Length: 568
Image (cartoon, rainbow, N blue to C red; front, side, top):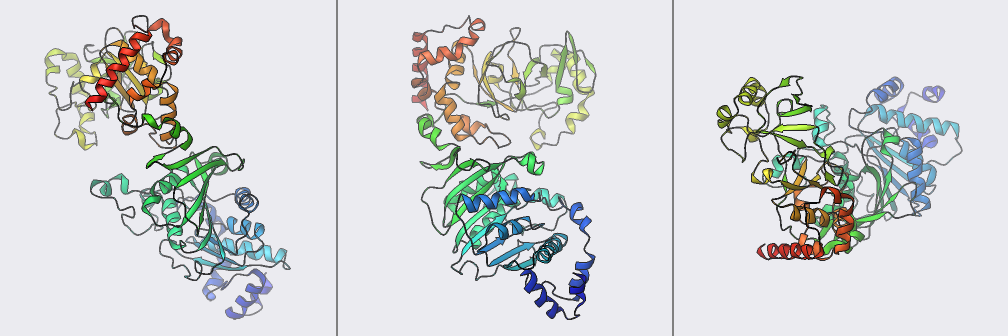
């Protein structure tokens, strides 16, 4: 290699020789490039792996992806495009698995990766000089401003856009002081407050995939990109708004923990472009089992759902709840407001013993406590509830509960330091998520944060209602019978199928008020037999002895729901 580099000082002659050997066009653009190539520090490659939020694809995975594209999709592209080629593993795999490739086109912003990829191609060419090399055009450039060769989509040749764009949001990338950011813009065209808040934040990977689909929408071929499942979901969700000419969408799950040591649900997202489909639907598989379809998600009857088959069987209950779902208590001061109970002793997170009146102290359930069907044991936590409604005066505490008032005053600086603007201008020690519903004796609750779609029946403890925190959602009831039947209906097969068909479990908060409000309890109860209700309740009979559970009572409950439905 050294002899080849020193055989001529003329860069043009050197590039011709390197092109003949490696297929790389314009290996060096100048003498400075030659110096940079010799001096490139490979240690910098490893130091900067996460500087731009990238997870470099291991060779075994890039090989598996290309093997799947060749063997299962029968792809044989003429042109391979890698918009963020990193260490070049996808380029190496593509040229190995697709012998018909005539052109490789890659873009990479990190100079160390750019030179590493060229060195690897050169090293491989020297090892096997007889092998034919495709024409390879590598650009050290920013993908967000790169001007792609206009002849690529118009070539009429089969394209493969492959790669692994950064798994990071624009806000996170900005916090790393990275310059590798798209131009500041509201690229999803959010309006009003949505554009000013978190909704205008987006994944860099999503941006790059959309950029590729837009840039090459007039070409024909396949896009195959590794990404978080949430990114693929967002893209499929937004397809009706875009004029992409695409079809045959697939999502093939990978093990991101094993391959990238990343705590994320991720997949290979595959899209065929050049042909269109009326229904944006994406079929899911495992990359290790690409011939066994798991489910499909996308648009069905103008609804975006996570499991089309289950939704088709349960969509009849997709309407409006007869009761209003609420979220639990929000206080943003857990070190003071949440207490641990050890016998008769209360302690806070500051490891202080807390001696206060108990009239405003309630048992508290958090998301992780909502595991069993019926809560029968006292929770591990208690919470101080300072208000019965949002904005209510809190000065009464000083008179009715002087010990508690002094405790709160002793920690007032922690309340004043709460960052959320919702507390500004509100009475001291204000909370949110409190209302008349909070003090109802019976509740049916679900965790908003966990993947489990089962509902929990919450009974009072020591003649006091049990509170839930703001990671939970619940319905409240004054009588046990309505609570018990609602609990059973929500755990019925049709309600569970519906939830599992509309919820995306890779969301940070899979279950939201908006989704829960779509469950028409009347329609669900009408389609749930009393025998199924009995099956749901049977494991809990011993703690529901005060509830009247008979078929006649169930019919009265259904009629009550119907009357509520007529009022909506």
